[in-house]
Structure formats: structure tokens, C-alpha cells
Image (cartoon, rainbow, N blue to C red; front, side, top):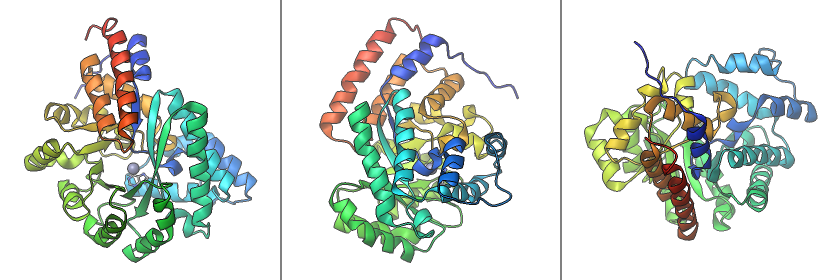
Length: 359
Ligand code: ADE
Ligand code: ZN
């Protein structure tokens, strides 16, 4: 089968870069580039397993050959074992915020996996302080806004998740962590297993944003169960929502944001090519989605590369891109004032490029 590709010329690339973007689906641990990984391993005297890639080149080779989500996760959890001190978490997040800023991403809501560190005897305070300080400094240095979303690992029991939630209450209280998410191996661990964790957060902190990975490898029922049982207002990935007309109608009616990760879906064999993703379908059905990088150090591209990949597959014009950008702003968890600011910037950029781009 031949795949039609649209050209993303320099003007279009410039437009996509300048278009104010919000990122809602990026795992800070997934931004650990091989050069920083090896630098931290050295700095912290960590010996990586003998079958772990030994050079940046070997990493690239490994990253081009993930069989599926689990194969990636097995590697990802080893990679993050080089993160030990507060400074390491700070350096990691700062390098992401710089790249996001360079790509024209003005607001980021970033995931982190505390249990991946706690099980290695790293204290929660070390992780949260490093990430939180980077959020503050990125705001000062780049003017970007950022929010932390704590994810629970679904391959661990919900009792473990409850404990992390108890220990992180002070961070929710003090507006240091803003959301709760659910990630890791999807299919064997359905949403219902974590109903108690989501109930606990929702009861104590009704303003905390709730989201969950669903419909990445799991079918559309994982999306429905996340909405019904976990009461999430956002779905991470959600591409398998395309399997149910009724679900798609619900997502459109409630304007539930799907945080789609095109390059990730290709690298983890969810689809063979970005053009197979239901991006036009969702757009035409008025289902809001944002475009995100997921684990950019592993999947070959940050947010702008994901926008370009979508452009090359779907050939959207300024009008469609404007709508995608506005949908991302609407679905963000930042203040109304910040949303207004971002919408004004979208108007400015689209007005300018509307005169230069004919589609
Ligand atoms: N953790 C990091 N990336 C993930 C993904 N794409 N799906 C589930 N868990 C993850
Ligand atoms: Zn993810």
C-alpha cells in the first residue's frame, strides 16, 4: 500500500513552530536522552545491566526496535535508575523545558512516575523538589507555564498507589502537584483496579485534574471505564476510541481532550504509520485532541516533530491547525487568564501565516 505524504515546507514548519502549543502528555522520565543518561550513570556510580546499550548509537538502534509497549517499558524503567539526586531530577526537567520552549510549546503539563523511584529507595521529596524547582525556573527563564501530574504505575497494586497518594497530599495541598494520571502496562491492568485511588484524590482535592492512559493498546472499553469509574476529564492516547461510535459521540459532546502521541504510536507498533491514526476522523467528529511527544528521548521527536509528522500525513491548513491549537488550550488545566493569553497569541500567529499559506 502506498502512503501519501504532504510536504511540510519551510514556511509551514515555521508556522507550526510559532503556533502556540500546549503539551499534555510527556513523561519527564521519558525525556532522558542517552547523553544525559550516561552522564548521570557516571556521576552517580550506577552500573547498568550488561545487556543495556553501551553507547548513544546502541541506544538509537534499540529505540528503533521496540516490539510493543512492554518492551519499551522494560527498558524505560532501567533507564530511569540513573536518577538519584534532586539535581538529577532538576537537570532532566530543565532540559525538557528548554527543548519544549525551543519548539514553541508555551504550556506543558508533565507526568512523572514516583513509584519508579520510590522502589529504588529514592525519597518522594527528592523527586518532587527537583521537578518543582525546574518548573519554577523554566517559568522564570522561558516564560512558559508548567504543571506536574503524578502518575500511578498500573503494574503495581492499588494499595501501593494509595500509599503514594497519602504521602503526596502535602504537594497537592500546596499546588505543587496538579493532577493524577495512570500509566505503564495497560492491557493486564484495567482502570477498575484503581477506582479507590481516584476516589481518594477526588474526595480530598476536587479541583485536581484527573487523567489516565487508556485505549493505547487496550480497546475502547478502557476509555469508557476510565471515564465512568475513574471520573477522568481527559484521556491519554485514546486512539482506540475509534472502535465505538457511541464513545466518540460522548467524547465530542463532553469535549473530552484526547492527548494523542503520533510518533510514540508508531515506535510502539500501535500503528505502522502516522497516517493510520484516527486524526482526521476525530477532527471531523469534533473530538478535541492535542498532539504530544510521550517519551521523546525514546521515540525520536519532541512536540514540534510530532506536529510535523501529523502535517505530513494529513496536510492540514492554517484553519485546522488553529482549531487543534485552540482545543489544546481549552483542555489545559491552566488559569482562564493564561488561556486568554494563549488564545490571543494563536490569533496573532494564524493571522500572520494565513496570508502566507494558501491551504
Ligand atoms: N509510561 C511512559 N510512557 C508510557 C506509555 N506510552 N504508555 C504507558 N505508560 C507509559
Ligand atoms: Zn504516556
